[in-house]
Length: 407
Ligand code: KG4
Ligand code: ZN
Image (tube, rainbow, N blue to C red; front, side, top):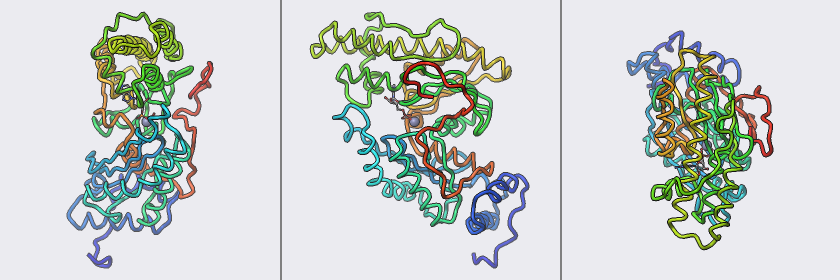
């Protein structure tokens, strides 16, 4: 339909109000007039303004670690496409992610992944209402690649950019998959973070606890490395543990039984190393590896269950009606840990919500969804939004004490 033939723009107050901030704050008039004209086109097709909100389409881009990801998500919670290209092969021989290799691989693959996601969704740039790209925290070279790509596409498509906090992507995934209402308790367990947070709204997080040293995913990866299981370690340890005896090795449960919601995993990792040395590194039988993995995983499960139990009490004081525990981040893909968290949640009158495993590990659907949530509140960003290596969800949380802290 030619522009001059368009019917009047929809004037639904909630849509306007939700976008008002974004209109005023950051975007060029041109970008918004194009977004408005798309809304008008939808109105012309007989969609109500609410339908237009539901039909908002956002491209998500994620490049903060070693997965290059692009996804297309609609505000009605439909994931139209989600492409993930891992780089495990490129990093495997180093036993961990090498930042420069990761950044180069993102440069090489991001354009193709975006094109594939658009193809799969059957859409072009002109269908997008916004572009959401991870702006941190993460490996800065990779973050820059994805954010720059997102900015370029937003500029070309004439739509708003949303610079998304990767952790907020994880934190809000349960609202994409299960429409969970605020507030909820969040256990965020990934390769770089292990935190308990009260989630009150978009951008509103109160940290209840964090790790003094290693993140839980990091503990999985280091354990896998010690046992020669390769990288990434989490899925390999989980697989090996299935055939193991969790009672064979008496591993520590750091901080278990202590007040508060903080974590520590470096002692557990060291205990695994001592066990390996005692058995004789390089001479481990498959059963030794399986038993160590099972023992390690049981220790992690015990610690998480104990810390979460304390968090239920703390969260309950602030939000007596809140009864949902969300687990998110790569480690949340672990079936044994999910089962244990489900049991402990139930015992405390909470319900566990765990997104499907492919939306726990890094992906761009969660970034697109965080973009949709932010766009609805008018929280868009300027094209000079900076990449951020460090970006805590709760900037007011006091620094945790302990060595090697990852706030
Ligand atoms: O969220 P994520 O994909 O990336 C970061 O933001 O860090 O999390 C990656 C971490 C890695 O440490 C990986 O070993 C761990 O999540 N992970 C798992 C499992 N799948 C991934 N840990 C335990 N069990 C799994 N099944
Ligand atoms: Zn992540």
